[in-house]
Image (cartoon, rainbow, N blue to C red):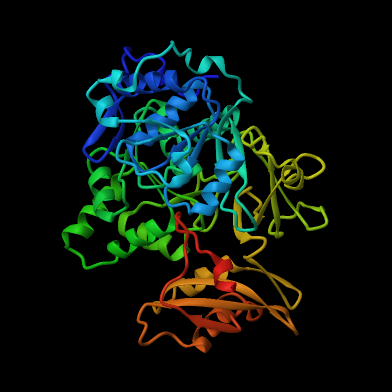
Length: 498
Protein backbone atom coordinates (compact mmCIF):
# COMPACT_ATOMS: atom_id res chain seq x y z
CA UNK A 1 0.00 0.00 0.00
CA UNK A 2 1.62 3.24 -1.17
CA UNK A 3 1.45 5.99 1.42
CA UNK A 4 3.82 8.50 -0.19
CA UNK A 5 3.43 8.23 -3.97
CA UNK A 6 5.53 11.33 -4.69
CA UNK A 7 8.59 9.43 -3.44
CA UNK A 8 8.03 6.57 -5.88
CA UNK A 9 9.68 8.38 -8.80
CA UNK A 10 12.84 10.06 -7.47
CA UNK A 11 13.85 11.16 -10.98
CA UNK A 12 10.37 12.30 -12.06
CA UNK A 13 9.00 15.84 -12.36
CA UNK A 14 8.68 16.22 -8.56
CA UNK A 15 12.31 15.29 -7.86
CA UNK A 16 13.50 18.88 -7.63
CA UNK A 17 10.53 20.09 -5.56
CA UNK A 18 11.25 20.91 -1.92
CA UNK A 19 9.84 18.26 0.40
CA UNK A 20 10.96 19.39 3.84
CA UNK A 21 12.81 22.34 5.30
CA UNK A 22 14.24 22.79 8.77
CA UNK A 23 15.87 26.19 9.07
CA UNK A 24 18.54 26.49 6.41
CA UNK A 25 18.54 22.77 5.57
CA UNK A 26 16.06 21.51 3.00
CA UNK A 27 15.56 18.26 1.13
CA UNK A 28 13.97 17.84 -2.26
CA UNK A 29 11.77 14.87 -3.08
CA UNK A 30 14.69 13.38 -5.01
CA UNK A 31 17.05 13.74 -2.07
CA UNK A 32 14.52 12.42 0.44
CA UNK A 33 13.72 9.47 -1.82
CA UNK A 34 17.39 8.56 -2.28
CA UNK A 35 18.23 8.89 1.41
CA UNK A 36 15.18 6.98 2.64
CA UNK A 37 15.67 4.21 0.06
CA UNK A 38 19.27 3.67 1.13
CA UNK A 39 18.34 3.74 4.81
CA UNK A 40 15.37 1.42 4.26
CA UNK A 41 17.74 -1.16 2.78
CA UNK A 42 19.71 -1.18 6.04
CA UNK A 43 16.65 -1.80 8.23
CA UNK A 44 14.61 -4.03 5.93
CA UNK A 45 15.04 -7.03 8.25
CA UNK A 46 15.02 -5.12 11.53
CA UNK A 47 11.43 -5.71 12.63
CA UNK A 48 10.28 -2.73 14.70
CA UNK A 49 12.57 0.30 14.73
CA UNK A 50 12.80 3.04 17.34
CA UNK A 51 13.15 6.60 16.08
CA UNK A 52 14.72 9.29 18.21
CA UNK A 53 12.07 11.81 17.17
CA UNK A 54 13.83 15.14 17.46
CA UNK A 55 12.44 18.14 15.52
CA UNK A 56 14.97 17.62 12.72
CA UNK A 57 15.07 16.37 9.11
CA UNK A 58 16.75 13.20 10.40
CA UNK A 59 13.44 12.17 11.97
CA UNK A 60 11.67 12.66 8.64
CA UNK A 61 14.20 10.52 6.79
CA UNK A 62 14.03 7.84 9.49
CA UNK A 63 10.24 7.55 9.52
CA UNK A 64 9.95 7.62 5.74
CA UNK A 65 12.65 4.93 5.50
CA UNK A 66 10.80 2.74 8.00
CA UNK A 67 7.58 3.10 5.99
CA UNK A 68 9.39 2.19 2.79
CA UNK A 69 11.00 -0.82 4.44
CA UNK A 70 7.72 -2.01 5.93
CA UNK A 71 9.22 -1.75 9.43
CA UNK A 72 6.84 -0.36 12.10
CA UNK A 73 8.35 2.84 13.50
CA UNK A 74 8.18 3.67 17.22
CA UNK A 75 8.67 7.45 17.59
CA UNK A 76 10.34 8.33 20.90
CA UNK A 77 10.02 11.62 22.72
CA UNK A 78 13.65 12.70 23.31
CA UNK A 79 12.64 14.00 26.75
CA UNK A 80 11.06 10.76 27.96
CA UNK A 81 12.37 9.74 31.38
CA UNK A 82 14.39 6.62 32.06
CA UNK A 83 11.58 4.59 33.61
CA UNK A 84 9.01 5.36 30.90
CA UNK A 85 11.54 4.82 28.13
CA UNK A 86 12.44 1.40 29.55
CA UNK A 87 8.74 0.49 29.56
CA UNK A 88 8.25 1.57 25.92
CA UNK A 89 11.33 -0.31 24.73
CA UNK A 90 10.41 -3.42 26.69
CA UNK A 91 6.88 -3.34 25.32
CA UNK A 92 7.68 -2.62 21.66
CA UNK A 93 10.97 -4.55 21.47
CA UNK A 94 12.70 -2.64 18.65
CA UNK A 95 15.99 -4.05 17.41
CA UNK A 96 17.34 -0.81 15.94
CA UNK A 97 17.33 2.86 16.93
CA UNK A 98 17.53 5.51 14.22
CA UNK A 99 19.16 8.72 15.46
CA UNK A 100 20.96 11.81 14.17
CA UNK A 101 24.74 12.05 14.14
CA UNK A 102 24.81 14.48 17.06
CA UNK A 103 22.26 12.69 19.25
CA UNK A 104 23.51 11.45 22.61
CA UNK A 105 21.47 8.38 23.47
CA UNK A 106 20.38 7.46 27.00
CA UNK A 107 21.63 4.11 28.36
CA UNK A 108 18.42 2.26 27.48
CA UNK A 109 18.84 3.08 23.78
CA UNK A 110 22.55 2.32 23.72
CA UNK A 111 21.63 -1.35 24.04
CA UNK A 112 20.07 -1.29 20.56
CA UNK A 113 21.91 -1.34 17.23
CA UNK A 114 22.32 2.29 16.24
CA UNK A 115 21.88 3.40 12.64
CA UNK A 116 22.88 7.01 12.15
CA UNK A 117 20.75 9.24 9.92
CA UNK A 118 22.52 12.26 8.44
CA UNK A 119 20.37 14.84 6.67
CA UNK A 120 23.39 16.88 5.61
CA UNK A 121 24.68 13.92 3.63
CA UNK A 122 21.24 13.50 2.06
CA UNK A 123 21.12 17.19 1.10
CA UNK A 124 24.50 16.83 -0.62
CA UNK A 125 23.17 13.79 -2.51
CA UNK A 126 25.72 11.61 -0.72
CA UNK A 127 23.28 8.76 -0.17
CA UNK A 128 26.18 6.29 0.03
CA UNK A 129 26.78 7.69 3.51
CA UNK A 130 23.99 5.37 4.58
CA UNK A 131 25.74 2.32 3.18
CA UNK A 132 24.46 -0.12 0.60
CA UNK A 133 22.07 -2.98 0.74
CA UNK A 134 19.56 -5.00 -1.23
CA UNK A 135 16.96 -3.15 -3.26
CA UNK A 136 13.85 -1.93 -1.53
CA UNK A 137 10.52 -2.67 -3.21
CA UNK A 138 9.05 0.37 -1.51
CA UNK A 139 5.65 0.38 0.06
CA UNK A 140 3.84 -1.68 -2.55
CA UNK A 141 4.91 -4.82 -0.69
CA UNK A 142 2.83 -3.92 2.34
CA UNK A 143 -0.89 -4.26 2.96
CA UNK A 144 -3.41 -1.80 4.38
CA UNK A 145 -3.59 -3.56 7.75
CA UNK A 146 0.18 -3.75 8.22
CA UNK A 147 1.37 -1.47 11.04
CA UNK A 148 2.93 1.81 9.98
CA UNK A 149 3.66 3.30 13.41
CA UNK A 150 3.31 2.41 17.07
CA UNK A 151 2.66 5.62 18.97
CA UNK A 152 2.58 5.55 22.77
CA UNK A 153 -0.19 7.35 24.62
CA UNK A 154 0.56 9.77 27.45
CA UNK A 155 -0.03 7.21 30.18
CA UNK A 156 -2.16 9.43 32.44
CA UNK A 157 -3.91 6.41 33.98
CA UNK A 158 -0.98 3.98 33.98
CA UNK A 159 2.05 3.05 31.87
CA UNK A 160 1.86 4.32 28.28
CA UNK A 161 0.10 2.02 25.82
CA UNK A 162 1.35 1.52 22.26
CA UNK A 163 -1.38 2.33 19.74
CA UNK A 164 -0.75 0.30 16.59
CA UNK A 165 -1.60 2.50 13.61
CA UNK A 166 -2.03 0.58 10.35
CA UNK A 167 -1.24 2.05 6.96
CA UNK A 168 -4.95 2.04 6.22
CA UNK A 169 -5.65 4.47 9.09
CA UNK A 170 -2.88 6.87 8.06
CA UNK A 171 -4.09 6.96 4.46
CA UNK A 172 -7.77 7.29 5.43
CA UNK A 173 -7.18 10.24 7.77
CA UNK A 174 -4.89 12.14 5.42
CA UNK A 175 -7.22 11.62 2.47
CA UNK A 176 -10.21 12.77 4.53
CA UNK A 177 -8.31 15.96 5.37
CA UNK A 178 -7.49 16.42 1.68
CA UNK A 179 -11.22 16.35 1.02
CA UNK A 180 -12.11 18.67 3.92
CA UNK A 181 -9.35 21.23 3.44
CA UNK A 182 -8.73 21.13 -0.31
CA UNK A 183 -5.16 20.09 0.55
CA UNK A 184 -2.98 19.85 -2.59
CA UNK A 185 0.62 19.52 -3.67
CA UNK A 186 0.77 23.30 -4.01
CA UNK A 187 0.35 23.79 -0.27
CA UNK A 188 3.32 24.66 1.93
CA UNK A 189 2.68 23.74 5.56
CA UNK A 190 4.35 25.64 8.41
CA UNK A 191 4.49 24.28 11.96
CA UNK A 192 6.64 23.70 15.03
CA UNK A 193 4.93 20.62 16.45
CA UNK A 194 6.77 17.71 18.13
CA UNK A 195 7.51 14.82 15.77
CA UNK A 196 6.83 12.02 18.25
CA UNK A 197 3.07 12.62 18.20
CA UNK A 198 0.44 12.06 15.50
CA UNK A 199 -0.27 15.81 15.16
CA UNK A 200 3.24 16.81 14.19
CA UNK A 201 4.40 13.60 12.54
CA UNK A 202 1.41 12.13 10.69
CA UNK A 203 -0.54 15.30 9.93
CA UNK A 204 2.41 17.67 9.89
CA UNK A 205 4.96 15.60 7.92
CA UNK A 206 3.28 12.63 6.23
CA UNK A 207 0.31 14.85 5.30
CA UNK A 208 2.31 17.19 3.05
CA UNK A 209 4.42 14.32 1.69
CA UNK A 210 1.32 12.28 0.75
CA UNK A 211 -0.02 15.26 -1.19
CA UNK A 212 3.31 15.98 -2.89
CA UNK A 213 3.56 19.34 -1.13
CA UNK A 214 6.13 20.61 1.32
CA UNK A 215 6.56 21.26 5.03
CA UNK A 216 8.63 23.91 6.76
CA UNK A 217 9.35 23.03 10.36
CA UNK A 218 10.39 25.89 12.62
CA UNK A 219 12.35 23.67 15.01
CA UNK A 220 11.16 25.81 17.91
CA UNK A 221 7.96 27.84 17.83
CA UNK A 222 8.13 31.62 17.66
CA UNK A 223 5.78 34.26 16.26
CA UNK A 224 8.74 35.60 14.25
CA UNK A 225 9.29 32.19 12.66
CA UNK A 226 5.61 31.87 11.78
CA UNK A 227 5.61 35.33 10.18
CA UNK A 228 8.79 34.60 8.23
CA UNK A 229 7.69 31.26 6.77
CA UNK A 230 4.06 32.15 6.09
CA UNK A 231 5.20 35.45 4.62
CA UNK A 232 7.56 33.72 2.19
CA UNK A 233 5.25 31.22 0.54
CA UNK A 234 3.66 29.22 3.36
CA UNK A 235 -0.03 28.52 2.80
CA UNK A 236 -1.08 26.57 5.91
CA UNK A 237 -0.27 26.78 9.61
CA UNK A 238 -0.77 23.95 12.11
CA UNK A 239 -0.55 24.72 15.82
CA UNK A 240 -1.84 24.03 19.30
CA UNK A 241 -3.76 26.53 21.47
CA UNK A 242 -0.71 27.76 23.37
CA UNK A 243 0.91 28.71 20.06
CA UNK A 244 -2.17 30.55 18.82
CA UNK A 245 -2.44 32.27 22.20
CA UNK A 246 1.08 33.62 21.75
CA UNK A 247 0.21 34.78 18.24
CA UNK A 248 -2.91 36.50 19.59
CA UNK A 249 -0.81 38.27 22.23
CA UNK A 250 1.46 39.70 19.53
CA UNK A 251 -1.54 40.76 17.44
CA UNK A 252 -2.87 42.56 20.51
CA UNK A 253 0.34 44.59 20.75
CA UNK A 254 0.84 48.21 19.77
CA UNK A 255 -0.16 49.00 16.19
CA UNK A 256 2.68 49.91 13.88
CA UNK A 257 5.33 47.67 15.43
CA UNK A 258 7.28 45.58 12.94
CA UNK A 259 6.55 42.29 14.74
CA UNK A 260 2.79 42.88 14.87
CA UNK A 261 2.54 44.15 11.30
CA UNK A 262 4.56 41.31 9.75
CA UNK A 263 2.59 38.68 11.68
CA UNK A 264 -0.72 40.27 10.69
CA UNK A 265 0.25 40.24 7.01
CA UNK A 266 1.49 36.63 7.19
CA UNK A 267 -1.60 35.25 8.93
CA UNK A 268 -3.92 37.26 6.69
CA UNK A 269 -2.28 35.74 3.61
CA UNK A 270 -2.40 32.12 4.75
CA UNK A 271 -4.94 29.83 3.11
CA UNK A 272 -5.64 27.82 6.26
CA UNK A 273 -4.97 28.27 9.99
CA UNK A 274 -5.62 25.04 11.91
CA UNK A 275 -5.55 24.42 15.66
CA UNK A 276 -5.71 21.03 17.34
CA UNK A 277 -4.72 18.78 20.29
CA UNK A 278 -6.88 20.84 22.67
CA UNK A 279 -9.69 23.38 22.49
CA UNK A 280 -8.72 26.87 21.32
CA UNK A 281 -10.37 29.42 23.63
CA UNK A 282 -13.02 31.55 21.93
CA UNK A 283 -11.25 34.69 23.17
CA UNK A 284 -8.15 33.81 21.10
CA UNK A 285 -10.33 32.94 18.10
CA UNK A 286 -11.85 36.39 18.20
CA UNK A 287 -8.58 38.26 18.73
CA UNK A 288 -6.94 36.59 15.71
CA UNK A 289 -10.00 37.10 13.51
CA UNK A 290 -10.27 40.77 14.48
CA UNK A 291 -6.62 41.47 13.63
CA UNK A 292 -6.29 39.39 10.46
CA UNK A 293 -9.75 38.81 9.05
CA UNK A 294 -8.96 35.08 9.09
CA UNK A 295 -10.66 32.43 11.20
CA UNK A 296 -8.71 29.62 12.84
CA UNK A 297 -10.43 26.30 12.20
CA UNK A 298 -10.31 23.33 14.55
CA UNK A 299 -10.31 19.58 14.14
CA UNK A 300 -10.57 16.69 16.58
CA UNK A 301 -8.54 13.52 16.76
CA UNK A 302 -6.70 11.13 19.04
CA UNK A 303 -3.69 8.86 18.88
CA UNK A 304 -5.97 5.83 18.52
CA UNK A 305 -8.33 7.33 15.97
CA UNK A 306 -6.21 9.87 14.10
CA UNK A 307 -8.66 12.46 12.74
CA UNK A 308 -12.39 12.26 13.50
CA UNK A 309 -13.88 15.66 12.70
CA UNK A 310 -12.84 18.96 11.18
CA UNK A 311 -14.15 22.31 10.04
CA UNK A 312 -14.10 22.27 6.24
CA UNK A 313 -12.16 24.93 4.35
CA UNK A 314 -15.35 25.71 2.44
CA UNK A 315 -17.55 25.37 5.53
CA UNK A 316 -18.78 27.75 8.19
CA UNK A 317 -16.16 28.38 10.91
CA UNK A 318 -17.76 28.25 14.34
CA UNK A 319 -15.39 29.11 17.19
CA UNK A 320 -15.59 26.52 19.93
CA UNK A 321 -16.58 23.65 17.62
CA UNK A 322 -14.47 21.07 15.81
CA UNK A 323 -16.77 20.61 12.85
CA UNK A 324 -18.67 17.60 11.50
CA UNK A 325 -17.27 14.07 11.12
CA UNK A 326 -14.76 13.65 8.30
CA UNK A 327 -15.46 11.47 5.29
CA UNK A 328 -15.69 7.81 6.31
CA UNK A 329 -15.99 8.51 10.05
CA UNK A 330 -19.11 7.58 12.01
CA UNK A 331 -19.68 9.40 15.31
CA UNK A 332 -22.26 9.09 18.07
CA UNK A 333 -22.82 10.15 21.67
CA UNK A 334 -23.62 7.69 24.45
CA UNK A 335 -24.49 7.70 28.14
CA UNK A 336 -22.48 5.76 30.72
CA UNK A 337 -24.98 2.90 30.47
CA UNK A 338 -24.57 2.70 26.68
CA UNK A 339 -27.75 4.55 25.75
CA UNK A 340 -27.21 6.32 22.42
CA UNK A 341 -28.13 10.02 22.49
CA UNK A 342 -29.80 11.37 19.36
CA UNK A 343 -31.21 14.74 20.37
CA UNK A 344 -29.15 17.85 19.42
CA UNK A 345 -27.41 19.45 22.38
CA UNK A 346 -27.27 16.30 24.51
CA UNK A 347 -23.98 15.75 26.36
CA UNK A 348 -22.41 12.30 26.15
CA UNK A 349 -19.24 10.35 25.51
CA UNK A 350 -18.04 10.58 21.92
CA UNK A 351 -17.73 7.18 20.24
CA UNK A 352 -16.38 6.67 16.72
CA UNK A 353 -15.72 3.99 14.14
CA UNK A 354 -14.27 4.01 10.64
CA UNK A 355 -11.12 3.31 8.60
CA UNK A 356 -9.18 5.90 10.63
CA UNK A 357 -9.00 3.72 13.75
CA UNK A 358 -6.01 1.87 15.15
CA UNK A 359 -5.93 -1.92 15.23
CA UNK A 360 -5.36 -2.11 18.98
CA UNK A 361 -2.92 -1.58 21.82
CA UNK A 362 0.31 -3.53 21.45
CA UNK A 363 0.39 -6.55 23.78
CA UNK A 364 -2.79 -5.33 25.51
CA UNK A 365 -5.85 -7.18 24.18
CA UNK A 366 -7.61 -6.44 27.47
CA UNK A 367 -7.17 -2.69 27.05
CA UNK A 368 -8.18 -2.93 23.39
CA UNK A 369 -11.41 -4.73 24.30
CA UNK A 370 -12.17 -2.28 27.10
CA UNK A 371 -11.77 0.65 24.71
CA UNK A 372 -14.48 -0.66 22.39
CA UNK A 373 -18.20 -1.21 22.78
CA UNK A 374 -19.77 -4.60 22.09
CA UNK A 375 -20.87 -3.36 18.65
CA UNK A 376 -17.42 -2.13 17.65
CA UNK A 377 -17.38 1.60 18.46
CA UNK A 378 -14.25 3.13 20.01
CA UNK A 379 -14.83 4.86 23.34
CA UNK A 380 -12.86 8.10 23.09
CA UNK A 381 -13.27 9.11 26.73
CA UNK A 382 -14.09 12.59 25.45
CA UNK A 383 -17.41 14.24 26.19
CA UNK A 384 -19.18 16.44 23.68
CA UNK A 385 -22.35 17.62 22.01
CA UNK A 386 -23.56 17.53 18.40
CA UNK A 387 -25.79 20.28 17.02
CA UNK A 388 -28.51 19.99 14.40
CA UNK A 389 -25.98 20.59 11.60
CA UNK A 390 -23.68 17.82 12.80
CA UNK A 391 -21.02 20.14 14.24
CA UNK A 392 -19.29 18.63 17.27
CA UNK A 393 -18.34 20.61 20.36
CA UNK A 394 -15.86 19.01 22.75
CA UNK A 395 -16.75 19.53 26.40
CA UNK A 396 -13.56 17.84 27.57
CA UNK A 397 -12.26 14.58 28.93
CA UNK A 398 -14.81 12.45 30.68
CA UNK A 399 -12.47 11.96 33.62
CA UNK A 400 -11.45 15.60 34.13
CA UNK A 401 -13.71 18.02 32.23
CA UNK A 402 -17.24 16.75 32.85
CA UNK A 403 -18.40 18.06 36.21
CA UNK A 404 -21.57 16.63 37.77
CA UNK A 405 -22.77 19.22 40.24
CA UNK A 406 -26.17 19.46 41.89
CA UNK A 407 -27.73 17.14 39.32
CA UNK A 408 -26.34 19.10 36.34
CA UNK A 409 -23.75 18.04 33.75
CA UNK A 410 -21.33 20.95 33.38
CA UNK A 411 -18.58 21.20 30.76
CA UNK A 412 -15.36 22.81 31.97
CA UNK A 413 -14.62 24.32 28.56
CA UNK A 414 -17.54 26.76 28.43
CA UNK A 415 -16.64 28.14 31.86
CA UNK A 416 -13.00 28.51 30.81
CA UNK A 417 -14.04 30.50 27.73
CA UNK A 418 -16.08 32.93 29.84
CA UNK A 419 -13.23 33.43 32.32
CA UNK A 420 -10.60 33.86 29.60
CA UNK A 421 -12.59 36.76 28.16
CA UNK A 422 -12.00 38.65 31.44
CA UNK A 423 -9.09 41.08 30.91
CA UNK A 424 -7.63 40.13 34.28
CA UNK A 425 -7.30 36.43 33.38
CA UNK A 426 -4.33 35.31 31.31
CA UNK A 427 -4.82 31.53 31.67
CA UNK A 428 -7.38 29.34 33.39
CA UNK A 429 -8.33 25.73 33.96
CA UNK A 430 -11.59 24.50 35.43
CA UNK A 431 -11.98 21.20 37.28
CA UNK A 432 -14.41 19.51 39.61
CA UNK A 433 -13.76 18.63 43.25
CA UNK A 434 -15.77 16.39 45.54
CA UNK A 435 -18.44 18.23 47.48
CA UNK A 436 -20.61 16.62 50.19
CA UNK A 437 -23.67 18.61 49.13
CA UNK A 438 -23.34 19.06 45.34
CA UNK A 439 -21.47 15.87 44.50
CA UNK A 440 -18.85 17.98 42.76
CA UNK A 441 -18.20 21.72 42.90
CA UNK A 442 -16.71 23.85 40.13
CA UNK A 443 -13.13 24.98 40.82
CA UNK A 444 -11.17 27.53 38.75
CA UNK A 445 -7.38 27.68 38.60
CA UNK A 446 -6.38 31.16 37.43
CA UNK A 447 -3.19 32.76 36.17
CA UNK A 448 -3.82 36.49 36.49
CA UNK A 449 -2.74 39.05 33.90
CA UNK A 450 -1.42 41.14 36.78
CA UNK A 451 -0.41 38.82 39.64
CA UNK A 452 -0.34 41.77 42.05
CA UNK A 453 -3.96 42.66 41.32
CA UNK A 454 -5.95 39.57 40.29
CA UNK A 455 -9.72 39.66 39.80
CA UNK A 456 -11.54 38.53 42.92
CA UNK A 457 -13.16 35.12 43.22
CA UNK A 458 -16.57 36.76 43.64
CA UNK A 459 -16.08 38.81 40.49
CA UNK A 460 -15.21 35.73 38.45
CA UNK A 461 -18.06 33.68 39.89
CA UNK A 462 -20.57 36.45 39.18
CA UNK A 463 -19.33 36.72 35.61
CA UNK A 464 -19.94 33.02 34.98
CA UNK A 465 -23.34 33.10 36.68
CA UNK A 466 -24.44 36.07 34.58
CA UNK A 467 -23.18 34.76 31.22
CA UNK A 468 -23.93 31.04 31.64
CA UNK A 469 -25.97 29.97 34.68
CA UNK A 470 -25.69 30.26 38.47
CA UNK A 471 -25.01 26.55 38.95
CA UNK A 472 -21.93 26.81 36.68
CA UNK A 473 -20.14 29.47 38.74
CA UNK A 474 -16.82 28.53 40.37
CA UNK A 475 -17.26 27.83 44.08
CA UNK A 476 -13.49 27.92 44.64
CA UNK A 477 -10.77 29.93 42.86
CA UNK A 478 -7.06 29.15 43.14
CA UNK A 479 -4.42 31.61 41.87
CA UNK A 480 -1.26 30.18 40.28
CA UNK A 481 1.87 31.54 38.61
CA UNK A 482 1.52 29.03 35.73
CA UNK A 483 -0.55 26.03 34.70
CA UNK A 484 1.15 22.64 34.30
CA UNK A 485 1.33 21.64 30.63
CA UNK A 486 2.69 18.71 28.62
CA UNK A 487 4.82 18.82 25.45
CA UNK A 488 1.80 19.64 23.28
CA UNK A 489 0.70 22.48 25.50
CA UNK A 490 -2.26 20.62 27.01
CA UNK A 491 -3.06 21.54 30.58
CA UNK A 492 -2.46 18.59 32.88
CA UNK A 493 -5.54 18.82 35.07
CA UNK A 494 -4.70 15.70 37.03
CA UNK A 495 -1.65 17.56 38.35
CA UNK A 496 -3.90 20.39 39.51
CA UNK A 497 -6.16 17.99 41.33
CA UNK A 498 -3.19 16.30 42.94
